[in-house]
Amino acid sequence: MTQTRYDQIAAVIRDGYGNGPRGEEGRNLAFIADALPIPSAIQVGMDAVGPYNAFEPEEVKHALRLLAMQCPSCTVRIGREGSPVLFLLGTSLSQVQESFRHAHYDECSEISPSCIRLWWD
Picture 1 (cartoon, rainbow, N blue to C red):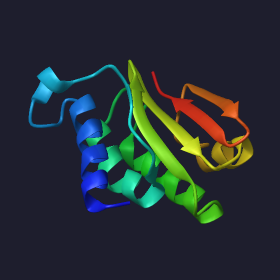
Picture 2 (picture 1 turned 90 degrees about the horizontal axis):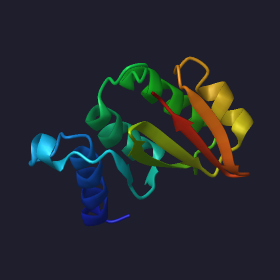
Picture 3 (picture 1 turned 180 degrees about the horizontal axis):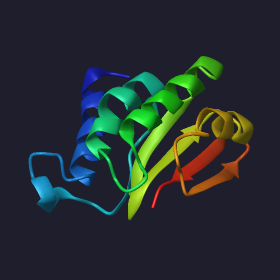
Picture 4 (picture 1 turned 180 degrees about the vertical axis):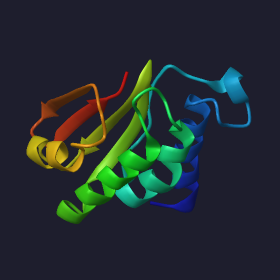
């Protein structure tokens, strides 16, 4: 992934959570950014989302690190469906449930055999 593409995805995430240059005016309650490798998602995504009800960035970062150890090629799409949502690509439901067991998500669903959706209210 080029630095320019990475910066574009990071801007979508920051803007979507009201942390971009437009502040709250740029906030978007319904978006899904393009996929990022887990280390990039940890770096840019979790801090952009910030704490939100049961979504605690440090817990989610820890869970993503655990997942990356099991599945180094996994990617993450960060978004918002009113509340924070992650789509974990290239992994299995059992790997996600194990890695995220302490991340207090409200919904965990298998969209396809290699795409798992986590949502926090």
